[in-house]
Length: 355
Ligand SMILES: Nc1ncnc2c1ncn2[C@@H]1O[C@H](COP(=O)(O)OP(=O)(O)OP(=O)(O)O)[C@@H](O)[C@H]1O
Image 1 (cartoon, helix red, strand yellow):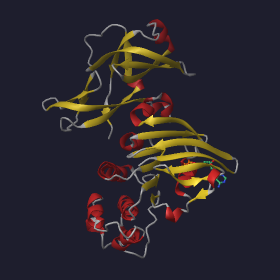
Image 2 (spheres, rainbow, N blue to C red):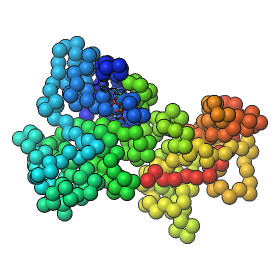
Image 3 (tube, rainbow, N blue to C red):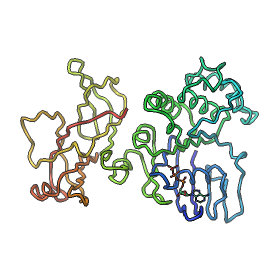
């Protein structure tokens, strides 16, 4: 299933002028508050008829202003999950869920019910009232209700934003199952780089109503501009767990060429995982350092240097196809003569598995 959107629309003083294509899996719309993420969702959903543009699902136009096509929201067969679950307070969880299947086409199997209830771990909640569910439980029910309408596409607008960290951690594994076990493409709005890093297959970064970057999650999130602030800046790399050393509680992760040691991880060998390496925790050396406590020393080639106003420089190092970012002072860049194509060693202080 491919969703294509090209649109231009004026909302008061704000102009949304953006285009992207999303494939199966999770496409995250990521960006600061006010960048236009929700406006984009409203146009995809058919809540807003744009001044110009098209929304196509597998090539079929749902909106095409040039041809005068605008399929109304209720005929698009999309599922929605918002920040606040919006459950019906007077109906039990079971009835809230059944409400979703009312909108499913007659031919679609409602035998789905048990599967979706199991997928979201809400069996024990079925006879409860929404008023005594936790925030995380409410969101799982809201997701279940959206899925039971057999949607062709799921639109999720900051579904975890109203939850505290513990509730977020509780619900994220269910969203991963949803991504991995259903064929429904998901457009997921978030301004949390951690949520996006964990869930997204593709990322569209919005800024001031425009698409600033789009592509695979690992590519886009490793670019310096993706991080909302410096503290979060770093590389996001993906690899497979090769082995786990029980004695030292250390996993070996195989990247494209290099290997990384990741502490405290008990993930079965073979599993693909993502790690985050903050650019502040990467030092650079022009000769391989010895006698250091850091376990991860990887060699690579300087690709690019981007100076910032605060006297630091972000250096991109290509380590056999994986880009690692290092933020060091402009003085160090000068002293080590870090110019493109120079061979360097990246000394990595912390590597954390994306939670
Ligand atoms: N109907 C409207 N009339 C006027 N301005 C609007 C309208 N809808 C949205 N805007 C403006 O468009 C901009 C983008 O809003 P939007 O809700 O799409 O951003 P967002 O990226 O989803 O932000 P957030 O993360 O805070 O939800 C904001 O400045 C908003 O005030």
